[in-house]
Length: 195
Image: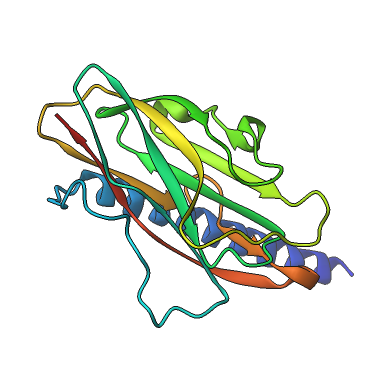
């Protein structure tokens, strides 16, 4: 019995150490991606998934926008393949040196309110989103529906194109459909150009 407890303890600590390393690695990847300079076409149509995307993949993207330095503006967050979704959770990341989070508004998804968002790390450029259909039946919305808007003040340098990403930092991505089936998640970064 004593040996069994020792073996179980070693397995637990080994798994815990691997999870910590994985989280640190994911966090480093997100920070690296946010620091890269990119030159997207601002004002173009919202990002769209490739036509080969299967129906079991929920796609999320922001609509590229521009904000005058020192002023405020909002980015529309859109979805594709939002079919019979029962619950979803993911994180939103941006560079807090460029964009200051202000508010969330224009909710167009049943049961989605500002209370579904974790804003405690917004000063670090991170929001969490955790939502579920309270009827637990699954909800569908038309393609490219803007389900909410995230509003920022532009505080970075003029000409900067700041990336907004959908990630696992700080909470993991999890999407479920009917009968507790797990669905896939796909996203593309969106950009705020500071004018």
